[in-house]
Image (cartoon, rainbow, N blue to C red; front, side, top):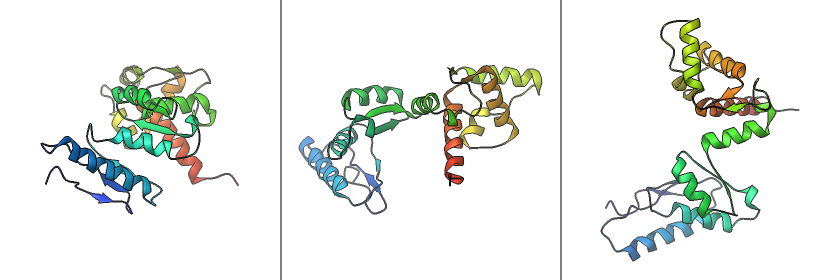
Length: 196
């Protein structure tokens, strides 16, 4: 049963592609191609595809993009994985922009000053910023520092996250998690209080 489709709910937008097993390659490809066609023909405007490596996600993305209107700048593929970003850039070249989540947030911070919250236009992308801020905390606050990354990932608004963003502003730099945190917070505030 493992090789069969484990979940297929287009109306609730969850689609699970089948796993490869000892079944024939042709059978697996037939299953994937049928699912891709069903996904592309689905009336759902948002779709979540849950699938392991080698199950046809990139093929699905290519077909979905090619079946839609627009240009390369109109299509965006995001990933958490650096190596997958490189692979997707090759596969989707000319039809979509591809970024990691933190890379896309960095791009947004560079191109939209309203998202920067105190960073200057020519800020630095400095992933080791976390270590610098921890050292600052230990020197100025207490011998043990908060779990800054966990606090940002949990969207905490406590003093430790404020301290971190203030230090980032002081150094005019962002790292991975704080770039995502800054963009998320700025966009959340924009959605919460739209311009009239």
